[in-house]
Length: 432
Ligand code: 5AD
Ligand code: SF4
Image 1 (cartoon, rainbow, N blue to C red):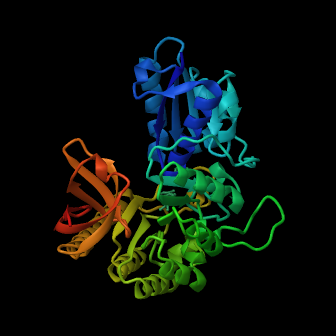
Image 2: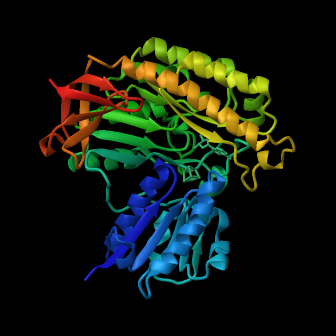
């Protein structure tokens, strides 16, 4: 009889994809089957995030909880970014943890579960084959890693220390994986990397020049791929060639994440982002002028060390000018071993909270305006999720979530829907 695996995932889409790889590896090499019951599990894994302090604190509260509820002899493992960052200290602090496997070491998971005390956290580890056994959460949208690690040195960010140097996965491996996903029915491909539009800069072998734009072109030649999404691109690498491809290639979904972080050129410089307020605005204007229906999302950090009232006004100014469809906003959180954590001019927490609220309130207004524009329009929806209340949901090409009354037959289908009602973060409609 198979053993049972319970796995909890914190953090970003990269982590969610790593979780799929962990499940596949443990299923096919170690005979584990997934369970949603912690108490039944023979192996409990938490795939962690370290981008801010909060998810790190969550790791230790969850570990305490696992230890209390686990059945006798159930193993506990810690994977992901906090595993990379804290390594053996995790076992020191929580001695009942059996193994620690970092975000760059997923291919070592199958050995680690068999050897108590394993700590695998080498961030220079090159995933040698990049290929894992197959498991996907969704039959319809397939996440595919195109690069690992990050070559930037943003002064606030811990990720280069947890996911290591940037390396591009060879295109032939990516294309093969996409073929495999389409054979199992996926029509939407979600390309993942820390800096997707820097793709092709670093391969582990010598090869001809190959860019992200070329990768998009090659993927769109696969007949069964109907939609291509990607995250995250870096504003610095959004050259005209890339924007041209984004605008003109019908298979590329017209939704794009353009992480701003701050609207102040001075703060951007202190963050070492490599672009100015003007460059950012120019890129967004260019995208909007070429793709009128585009939906743009962003990340914003408020309260970065030294951020003055004036700097923050620049952030509000960019928000007002671009009118983002979605903002992921964060209060700056000092991370160990980052340059920003050594800066002396920290912003008072109360001020940072006020700024966060201002961003949230302004964004709500824009969201309402932008979502209202959908009402009475007909949009094409790719349905991918059945809800318990007789509703089914999916996304438009430009990544608005749409709910309709409907059943299972709609799953995996592209269907025209007339929007009848707009909410702040989703839409309701009827099939036409
Ligand atoms: N504090 C707050 N937010 C952060 N992010 C990254 N590092 C930090 C930090 N130290 C945010 C950035 C990034 C997103 C994934 O998390 O906005 O784009
Ligand atoms: Fe993802 Fe960054 Fe969190 Fe790692 S630290 S899981 S890369 S968000």
